[in-house]
Image (spheres, rainbow, N blue to C red):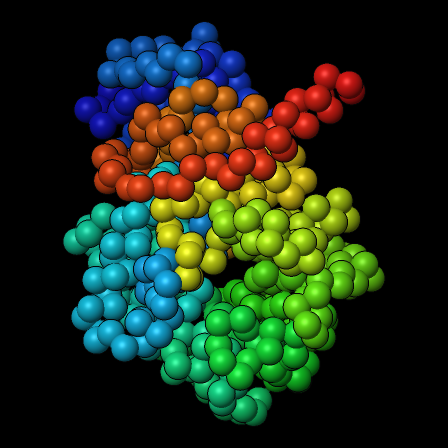
Length: 417
């Protein structure tokens, strides 16, 4: 038995997959790896003398995954323009602070989907080297866009298949983990309409083919139907937003296209942010088709577009609550924040599920998150790659009032069923 072996026990362990809860559970961590998971009564004799910590009334679960963040944005009004004006060293400092903020709310893996000049590569490497604390980071570098297209200020613009191919190769050389392409315009770039496609199928296919040749996945920012359709046809790996927004910011889902997304097994990060319920009260037409996507069988993963105006990284849990408000079952939301997100990011077996041999990324939360997802707000322990992290005090927004109503409705449905 080595000094690095520790046993953690609680009223329950949820392993990260549907139906995987274990009453009176235990997780054994050896160094930076999960060594064993199961019921306390079945703990192997070899771990009987290892140091143990018990958490009464709590649940042990995998560390959370933020699948859509912008570490270079600070979440305050005007953050995008401010990020473009920052010096490179200052922007790196912002990104390090954002990463630490995510870890402080239980996010142990984050996919950064757009930062100027590929600076996120430096931040990822600093965390991996142990120079700073933060979650595991997968970086996409600067979003690939058109001249004058959405987020053109991040310096990754191309307007032909050859130029796109070279840009993918250039980002590969810079050390990115994946490629992000803006298949449509966006809401945060002047002169860019979210409902219009930015690239042809041929151009998007060039991006996908070159990225896949280099062993990298492709995430596509896509709001409007035409852009979603082209991204799907090109074979992207994940769709970001997927709001089906039409001219005039009216949501108009295409059932046939949704079913094609399901058939192709494309994961969708709907970026249902913590403040979306308030926005929907002001404009009911702005409600994204998240429940419809779930009911049609789309593989949803958790992501908050963290860092954009009004969406600080620390409000991650509020995004999970929003998905419940929109009609996704709690365990489905949690799966989308753990094992399914890991699959979408190419990290199955690495993180997202408490299983032997996986990275020791785990949380202890007070209460039962399967009954009330807000339990993830009450952290008792954070382990990131086996190292305990003491969360910084962060000012997290309270749950939206409509979450309590959604939770009550879920409870009533269970009683009736």
